[in-house]
Length: 332
Length: 291
Image (cartoon, rainbow over all chains, first blue to last red):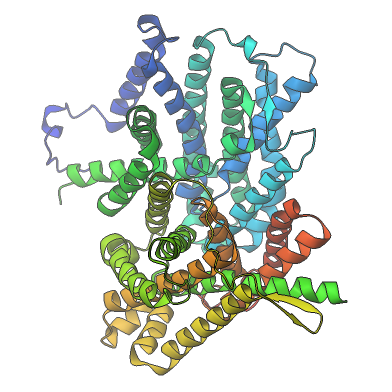
């Protein structure tokens, strides 16, 4: 906190009202607003509620990616693999009745769907993270994800190949559980990433982002922390995938392993501001709006508009919205 | 023995297409550190251009090189100045990757909407002539494709080593700041590198159009394999990119023959990952190369 208050609003705020108090107030307000929306909007029939649901999913995905890329500096291009693993795990468990529990929206299944990608992340991450740097790591994750896609396609009756697995859509009753679960997931993801970054783990992550050799010489176990961040992002992506499997009722390579699921979190984090907590949230709402409403209004040429938008944003706002806020509110 | 040789030869012929795309990527990446993932979409775009020149104006695909390559060079320069100029200067590489992604979305969707998603191919009257040499079957189109690829590689190699601008490009890909101290305008060099990169993808596009049938979304597949070829060969070495491409081509055809067409892709990526774990900087890469 600087002593020199030069800015529009700072002179209006009493001096004992710290920045962190403001953050808490905003967070509580946001939670209250989104938590009570189902009480005054008919969630079942409203497109706005669908848009919010999609935004919550994007928030969960992006916070995971944010943790890996924003705080540790390793750009992973394999996020869609974790998402798909979560979705397929849920579908396979449901269809084969492996847990013998209540099928629809089973939290145990969702947690398991989060853990399977973690295993994959550890298996893939250990060789990749220990040896590869920078772009080599990125392409390695991309290649690993594509290998997974082929394995799914060739999975035979287990994964039903290109057709995908169809879940009993008759279980669908209303949008309310989706909204609540998505909301809780978004809060959980944000809280997890927030707590991690505030803890010793976050300190270690930031240290190894800045200078790996120096961090190692201070006793930070590089590989462990990198894999930890990677695994957390895999868990979040997996649970999000599981939720989406419950939502779409069909889990196929084309829909679930679509590259969009890899690009959207990246776009959201960059648009919102890399390495911040609020960045992915703001970015998710903006990007969610562009994609959902864009799909409705412009339909077929929707990726073209998206492509142009991405280009424009990257040209003129590469630090994202949070960076823009910094630029506006910082006077030298 | 014959079959294996045939498979390997097919792999080499396939691999040179990936190799050409990879050399273009290598140039663009070397000077600007941009992962130009839209390379595949650009290749398909030129394939379409070649197709329309052939079906609407009746221009032979190989003669259309005369038209397409200058267009490609101009397009590359335009891409640089319009899209990548600011991003190339930033240290953070996510920005340029996302711009390339945006370009890829735009191009693929543009081609799907304007030219319909049906697969196309350029079929010429002489396209199916097959040579039988030493017990091997070699199609004329693939041979010409190989010839084009080799000529293009030779051309780029001569350009980089024998001309002043080429030396400037090499200098910039080694160290941008030092080369500006030598009086090299980085924008001009980057534009040249991108123009050549897009020019090479035009050659690859014509190769693609004459040899395979393609549709608008074919590009991403090629882009990934070109990236894999580039990384396998070692980022920053040009001959490494070409050899990486050929290696990928051979693995793909061998995997396709011995295991089955569906698994060939997975095998390519698995070999890629394996090679990376054994040689983290690619086969020919040196650890001093900035990644």
